Amino acid sequence: MANKDWLLVSLLGLFWGSSFFFVEVLLKYLSPFMIVYLRVCIASIFLILFICIKSVKFQFTFNNFFNLSIMSLLNNIFPFLLITFGQQTTTGGLASILNANTSFVAIILASLFLPFERLNLNRVVGISIGILGVVIAIGYQNIFQLKNDDLGKYLIIIATVSYGFAGVWGKLRLHNLSPIIAATGMLTVSTIILTPYAIINHLEEIYSLNFYIFKYAFIFAIICSVFAYFLYFKILESAGAGNLLICTIIIPPSSIFLNAFFLDQNITTNEYLGLVVIVLGLIILDGRLFKKIIH
Image (cartoon, rainbow, N blue to C red; front, side, top):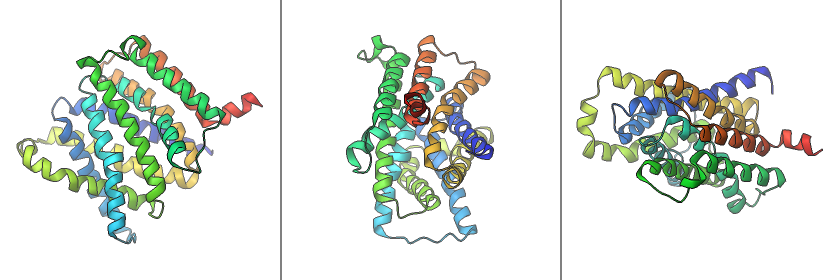
């Protein structure tokens, strides 16, 4: 990759890593549902404005709407809600560490459902090491002991499964849409799905929003969804999808640093060790370093 691409990949990792920090801040003032709703609503408005200004052409069909609806559930609504609810009982740092397993889950599911995706040696080794990292981060003694304080960890792991299915669905059903249309469609449909529930159950919370809280929600949506998507598309164009895996490696350290520096959150020895093992698994999963070693 060129130096410019390394910068873009690093920025994307930082932006996505900051999402766990913003959730931690907003949970002090808003319900998990409202955090997710504001994120998708604000981001969808900006992306709709962008495609209108750029006169991006797309064909609206029932089939596209159906596929985008499923994608919005798998890639936005379910994982966003699961992670945000999960962070009520766990730290942003640990949440980002567990979320890094999305790549492992995505590859396992892709090998099961996509005929052109196969598990090779570096993928099997990388996934195995990644799973070991999760066990270390959570603590092997806590794996089968589900307590109220541990629920958040498992919600975040379920979110990675949702992201994995989203990757499979996107490859199967959304390959005919441009990335910007797919992103705008997902966030817009997410907003449409969540709005009735927001009006019925959270209208008072919406009315009680003040400028200070809305400011954080606005920055959260713009950085972690709008800017992040633009960076994502630019990286796809200039460096290719294969280099996006590097973002996953950058996300946990970014989140841990932001939460430690601004919120004084500590990370346990187990979580540090788990992070190191998961990052090692991701590096092996990437394949380039692994191939150099075995050759």
